[in-house]
Image 1 (tube, rainbow, N blue to C red):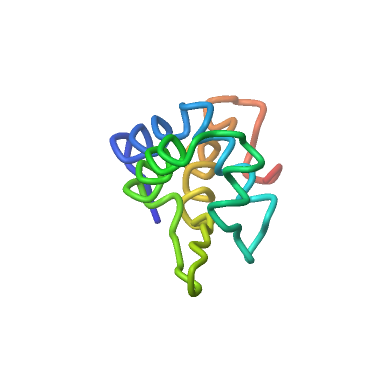
Image 2 (tube, rainbow, N blue to C red):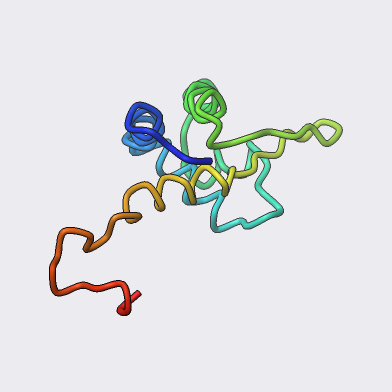
Length: 105
C-alpha cells in the first residue's frame, strides 16, 4: 500500500488516540494469532462499549480486522497498513542531507 498525505494523516489520526494505540500494540505483541476482544478488554481494563468504539475506528481505517471463531471475536492487526505508515514516514530519510549518498544505502 503506497500512501499519500491524506491517507497517512487519516491512519495516523486513528493511532493518535492512546486507547487505540494500546490496542494496536497489544495486537502486534500477539502476532499473527491475534487476540480475542475479551482478552484485549481485560489487558486494557476498558468497558466493552469503549473497546467496541475504538475497534470500530481501527477497523474502518483498515488497521485492524476481526474474525469470528464460534462465540469468540478475534482481532488481528493489518501489518501491511502498519508497514505502510512506517515506510511513508521514513522513505525519504536523509534525502536532503548532502553527506548521505546512494552508496550509503
